[in-house]
Length: 103
Image 1 (tube, rainbow, N blue to C red):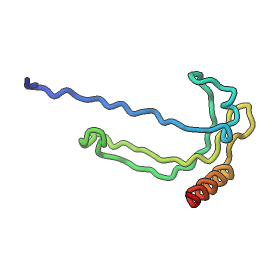
Image 2 (cartoon, rainbow, N blue to C red):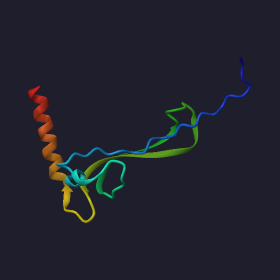
Image 3 (tube, rainbow, N blue to C red):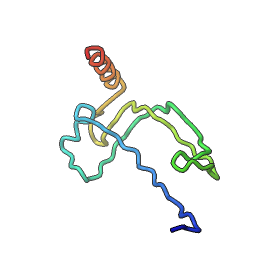
Image 4 (tube, rainbow, N blue to C red):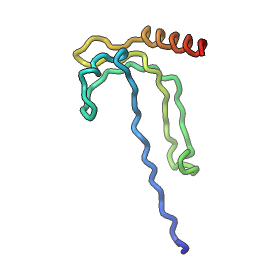
């Protein structure tokens, strides 16, 4: 069976996600999966790029798309106490490095 027309494939991009544990955001112990919550996240942009080619389709795009990579510096839940700050991330990084060294 042959097709005269090639159907267009529409690729939907997944929304960004964020993983936090109870040390990083103590409020999550009281929250429920499926409900929506507001967070205040301070980030530092570590990379900015403009793409003229679609990675999914391997075709040249009509308009370049811009994307960015961010490092999370702190996380807050409105009305709560500061949950996570930069020094907490540094502590976690040091702990992970020590764990890797012991493996």
